[in-house]
Structures are given as C-alpha cells and as structure tokens.
Length: 319
Image (cartoon, rainbow, N blue to C red; front, side, top):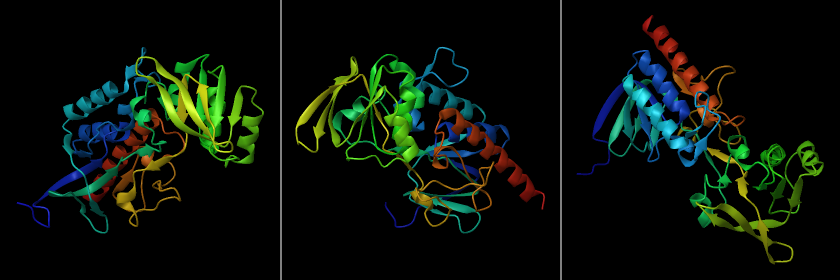
C-alpha cells in the first residue's frame, strides 16, 4: 500500500550519508566510539573508487588493490564495529531543527548528528564507450592513474585550470600529451595556459570535440575520433589513455538552502574542521574538497568528522 507520507520513523544517534572512503572511515571511528551509526548509501556503494580498477597509492597495500576490493574491506571493517547499513534514496532533508530528519519514499530517519559524505561525481563527455572503458584507459584522475601510462601517448580533454594541471602532471609519465578542447581558446588562468604552452611534451588540439573512444577492456584505449570544429572534418588520433578533466559536481543538492556552499556547490566547512554552519552537521570527503579529491584525504576528513561528532555529542550530553 502506498501512502503520501513515509510509513515509519527511525531514530539513530549518528547517521552517515555516503559510503566512499570518507563515509566508511567516519563509520569505523563512530562505531568504535559506541555511537552505533547508521550509514545510508545509494545504489552504488563505495563511491567513485568502485569505478576504478587498481589503486596503487592507498597506504598499506604494497602491491596495490582493486578499488572495489578496498571499499569492500572498509565496509566489512565498519560493520565489524557495529555500523548498520541501509541502501536508500534520501529525497529530502530537514536540518532546521533537532533531531534532523531525512526522508525516503518509505522511511523517515531522524538523528542527533549528521555526517555528510555524499562525494562528488566527475563530469563525463557522455560517449557510449566512456563508462565501459573507465579504468581501462579512460580516467578522471591524473594523480590516481597517471603512473600506469609511462612512456605512453596520453590525451586530456578540458580547457580549465584542472585540465591544464592534469596535462602538465601527466608529462612526468607520458611520452606525449595532447590537450584537447572544444573551443578556440582555453578558459584556464593565464599562468596555467603559459605552463601548458611552454611544456615541449604537450600539444594543444583546440576547436576539437571527442566523438568516439576506440578500444576494449582487453586492449585498453587505442585511439580517439575527433571532430575538427573549423573544418568539420573527422580526425583519428592514436592514444593510449584519455583523461577527462571537465570538472566535478559535488553531490550536495539535497542541502541547497540549508547549508553554506561555494559557487560550485561544494559544502563550506570551518577551517581545519568538518563543521558546517549548523551545529551537529559535519561534511567530509569530496562533497567539501575540490582541491585534493583523493581516497586518502577523504578518509582523513571522515576520521575528523567522526571525532568532531563524538566530541559534540559529549558536549551536549554534559549539559
């Protein structure tokens, strides 16, 4: 039987939204502090790391670990200390009064403390083979995957500061880097543009749009089909990797109007903290970090959020 309002209400001391490295680390710390957290995640548990293949730069794994395996291990660790998990789509949140309430189609959850670890989503080109080859030559993170392409031909698509930064960074590994942008000029800052122009390993392909990515999971990326927007001709480009650097979208829409955000939608937290402007609401991981965006930094802020939540609860209980 469907009704307009959710059927049941459940109260938890701490609710964590999101199951990437930030959310799971927060869950491990909160559960070990006997806060019995409930972690609510969407249909793809594990966040962005579940779309990567090998992770070589997460400390403790000398020979690397597959992204999904790392997230599964973290989830088991959080469960071991008593974290409860729920797969649920939260449609609305009310942070105007305590306890805070989160509502899905079937349940209203209330909590004294909310830890937001909803992450960010990399913007993609929307090509059919893009998702299929993600982790097999297509990537959205140069810091994570650049080292896999030593002495290879690498392409980067994008025209902003992050695309220029990634192109420069990738010249440490690649024999050649193409920077592809669909407009006639980059929108990056002058200093970043100058760095790209002065790097002998980088060739800029402006007024070009990526139409197709060639390759298979077995072979990896083998090339691109580009549209030359001036001549309208299609061009083939042989490359071993494509890094998509057209930005990220923080998953923060649920809190629009309730929490402070920057112009790109990232949640604003106090310096050296995960505190938002609402007492008892903390934000960690990529939903508030547009600078580093690494699994290890996300995990670090997840730890901070849980410790700050624990101290905040102690302060409330002490009054």
